[in-house]
Image (tube, rainbow over all chains, first blue to last red; front, side, top):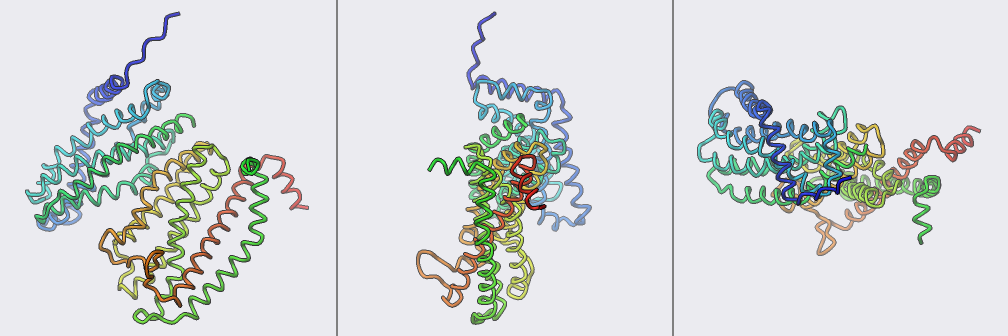
Amino acid sequence: MSAPAEAPATGAFCLALLRRQLTLAARRPIEIGNPLLFFAMVVALFPLGLGPAPDKLAGFAPGILWIIALLSNLLTSETVFRSDFEDGSLEQLLLAPQPLFMSVLAYIGAHWLTTGLLLALVSPVFALMINLPGQAIGALVASLLLGTAVLSLVGGIGAALTVGLKRGGMLISLLILPFYMPVLIFGSAAVQNAVLGTPAVPYLAILGAMLCLAIALAPLAIAAGLRISVDA
Amino acid sequence: MWSFFHKLGSPPWLFRIAGSILRWLLPVTLVALAVGLVWGLLFTAPDFRQGNSYRIIYIHVPAAVVALAGYYVMAIAGAVSLIWKMKMADVAMKACAPIGAALTFIALVTGSIWGKPTWGTWWVWDARITSMLILLFLYLGVVALYEAYDNKEAAGKACAVLSLVGMVNIPIIYKSVDWWYSLHQPASIKFTGESTIDPSMLYPLLWMIVTFYALFTCCLLMNMRAELLEREARTNWVKKLAAENRA
């Protein structure tokens, strides 16, 4: 019988987890592309539904872009823990000596890097398509960068609570959308203010505060949710 | 002292105690409700500017106050069941959700009925109204999550986590009318400083708020009793009770 191997330090463990999640995502590039494609498709729905008048679209643009970002985040959140739950690696993660709080952060970080970050970076293209005034693009990217990170963390809570359920898809929207609403309010307000030429920074600061709160508290709820789902 | 806690964990004891509380609390509450309604709706002076339509506050305000307080009860019960694994706290949490949802719904509906003649619109997207709507969704989310789990023990824990996360929303609702410029008026009743409501209107309102708390307690105890019977359906004390009632 061999002596048990030394457990890796938490930092190294989380980095390895992050790398694993990113590698898994990179092996399936279409999974990374899907949310962006979704974003593009839904952007195309609005001119069809609201009429293509440029000034009208420009008025709605901040809200439209933020709502689509929120929906695409909602759709991808559901899958964060799904495959690891199904093949049993989640159970191994719960048994690991490293704190679950940190490993959960690695999962959410990988989710944000492959969805929110990319979405924020390509959002200027879509913003131009629906005629968002140029001076608001900086605020849009900044608010999406901060806001989608909050969304990923909060969405993780819903994903953790519903991962063991067969019909989690609709339920996760019911559970999580109420918590998305404050992010939507301040995110679109930041862009709206930039459009009007008033400072967007106060709203970005509130988004930043929400992010701090979410980083500190959401992993606790996610970890508790995962333990419940795996036990059930 | 400790035996009390042990008894609290015993379903038949809780069922009996809840029954004996209800035996006097329920009639008292119903009488108080009738008295408060007649007092508020018929015997108070009409408002100087709003006339008679303001009278709906005797239902609207108590329902809203207790809807928020009910969320605390639910979340605290959830925390107790998570931390100390008390089964009865889990029962209380589950019993809270539908009552809270109903009260929130009453507050929203009465508010919009009052809003039509006063503000000229059924609905505005104002900070407090929107956050009360979110509160309704939070309650319904807890109900939906509980129903989605087949394993009811896990369902209780998952709902407890969800209701604790939802606590973030409650201080925001309380403070929304002070933090944001909104159509909804700020609180007229203040514990510190002068209330901006006349005593002749304040007393029936306070009466109704206390009555609604009692009504919430009654509904909670009744729901808990029903839930206890359902969970313990296979045990001897429930079978004995059913046999007694049949006889």
